[in-house]
Amino acid sequence: MPQVLSVCPSGVPVAFFPRNPICNVEIFKMQFPGDPPRERFVVLKAWEGLL
Image 1 (cartoon, rainbow, N blue to C red):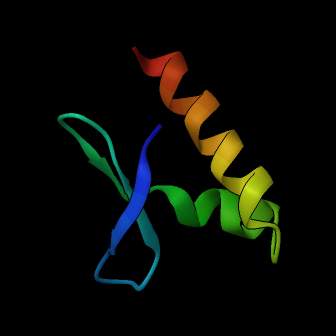
Image 2 (tube, rainbow, N blue to C red):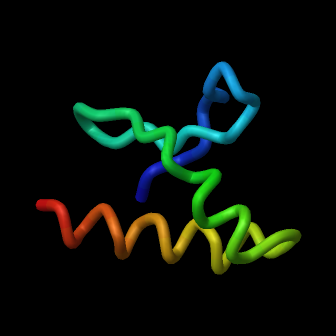
Image 3 (tube, one colour):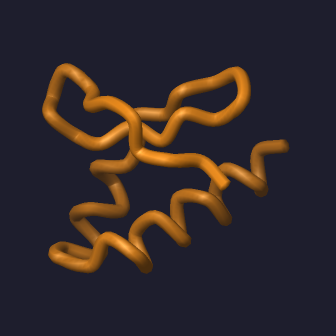
């Protein structure tokens, strides 16, 4: 499972996958403020949809 290893220039956490870091986490932060577990889950599901 991906882990939050760094932050984007905007300060948004970045989940680093095997090859691609993603910085679109802020979209889900706006949808789920203060709810990191669900936010991360939604990001992962969205990423899976791109594979």
